Image (cartoon, rainbow, N blue to C red; front, side, top):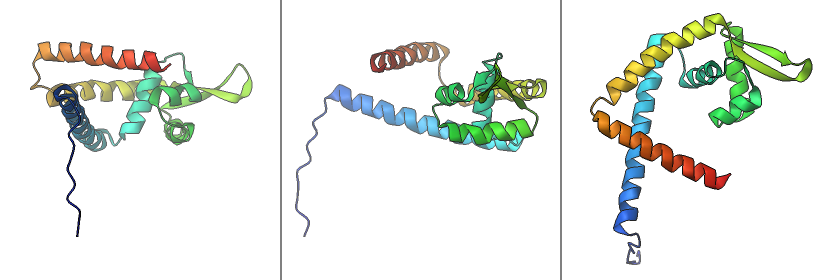
Amino acid sequence: MVANTERKNQGSPTSKARLRLWIQLLRNTRSIETEIRGRLRRNFDETLPRFDVMAALYRNPDGIMMSGLSRILMVSNGNVTGIVDRLVKDKLAVRSQRDGDRRTWIIYLTAAGIDHFEKMANVHEQWIDELLQNIDPEDVDTLNIQLTGNLKNRQDNHE
């Protein structure tokens, strides 16, 4: 027989609302991410991790070391290495030794990589616009300001 235990609802209405917000953000993020993964696969035969690596490389045209790439993407070097290996094999990226140091490499997109990424990025932006079209533009601006400020403050406090 299971004991009848009383559940205690200890959170304030505000904390419960924030919890619901977190759950909605998470659900929506997962839903959008699943849709984008499928579209990248169908339209470009690409994966979201490869897209993310190319995006980071694109934002760093002077190249970036593997450790920096891992930090930006918040994944381990091992996860990034396999993706970079395939990008190099596909001639979308190159590795270059850093100042003759054989232990460190800088990764760059090739011209073909830049062209490929730009095509995907333009379509990706259209997809995101479509998926978020029901959010009023003023609300988009407000949410961007609030979420960016909130996350930046949290990150600054943990550094």
